[in-house]
Length: 132
Image (cartoon, rainbow, N blue to C red; front, side, top):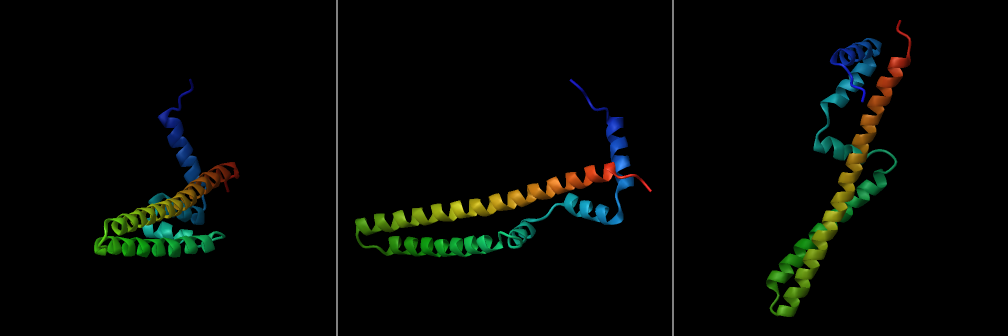
C-alpha cells in the first residue's frame, strides 16, 4: 500500500498556492469558510431548480398549517372517532412535512457536494497550468 509523506503534501499545498490567482484564492477561501444554514437555503432558491425549491417551501408551510389545524381539531373533538381521525391527519401532515424537508436538505447537500467538486476541479486545473 502506498503512503503519502507529510512533506509531499506540504509541497503539493505550496505548489497549489503558488499557482492560484487572487480571484481563485478568494473563491477557495470562501468555500473553505463554509456556508451557514440560511446561506445554503438561499442557494437552493437560485439556479435551474429554484421553481421546485419555492414550490416545496410553500407546500411544506401549507402542510405544517394543516398539521396545526388537525391537532387543534383533535383536541377540540367531542367523540373518540373524531379524535382518532384528526390525530391520523396530524400524523400524516407531520410525515409530509418531514419528507418535504428531507427533499430540501438533500438539495442543499447536493449543492454543497457540487461546490466541493468545483473546488477540487479548480485546484487540479491550476496545478496543470504553467507558472508565470
